[in-house]
Image (cartoon, rainbow, N blue to C red; front, side, top):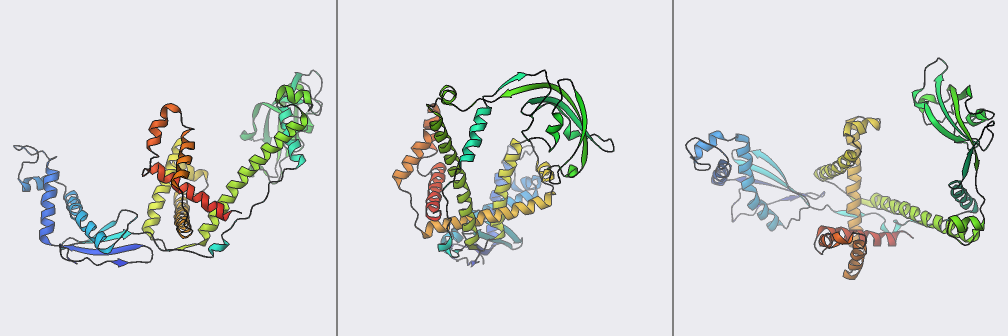
Length: 429
């Protein structure tokens, strides 16, 4: 369809939210846009005998890159045309349109817009997550209490032989039965309490009876399920040099101890505080788990036909986020892929799947917010933002607050988060 002021440009809408139209520009339109492009680009072209932008158009053309001139000419044709198509057909794009040149003579351009695709939620009433009350048993409290007591333990050098409960400081290294050193095992100044069962089964027993300065060789077979796959089920000869032996005394849990070290009046009160702390941690941990479960159920219930271009945009955003995270770890994408045991192509495929899931979830969440009429009042927003700003250093608070004014990106992000929280309140029961 040739575009002019009085001609309506027809479009074709797809179920995945893409909207297509093909526009053919007249020779006059192309010529006018090209002349404007030559003038704009010519301002940066130096031609002997002329001031920038004052040389004849044909002289400037000869100095320009033909491909860049074509791109600039097309760029000049698009704004008015895009506005016309969007307005006449009531298109609401969510990303920049895709532009494809189908022919140069006549100039024929295909424009593809991307609206929010149609979203349906399957069995929305079944999107629920059941919660459980956190259960903290006495043995769990005992374990944490023992950990606290060990933080206050005292040690004293021992001249005699090591026995259960003593702490041994040692150097050791290991080799396979054919005499090859296992480099990952070599350790210096390693400390272990005999009986703690933190070392390989049987290792700590071999330390009993040794004194500072003693050396001992022994063989230990690694467990079949050890984290180092190359050592699973294999015997390794260890060579140990004892550097120091210490007796370790762990204090008893008494009222005097908790008064002095924990600022708590009694053992009962201390155990109560420990339980409350554990319950709070369990609640927080469970909250994250329930929210993740809720999000997964929403994603699974979301039915949407996504345009490949929308997935491409989401993949680009996901990749940028990943690149920033990797830079903080001083890792390149290739290095990260190798650490994952996959090649670059496999990692990109996985990221594309993640991008599709992330986009599907976001659209599903938006659909639930819309269908359930989730609203956040101005008063709720005011309290939430004020609470957040209290965590910002006072000297920065005024400047940061500007980013959270109504209509700003920060405000919109908080608004969306509050709506998601209300969705969780309805789903997690």
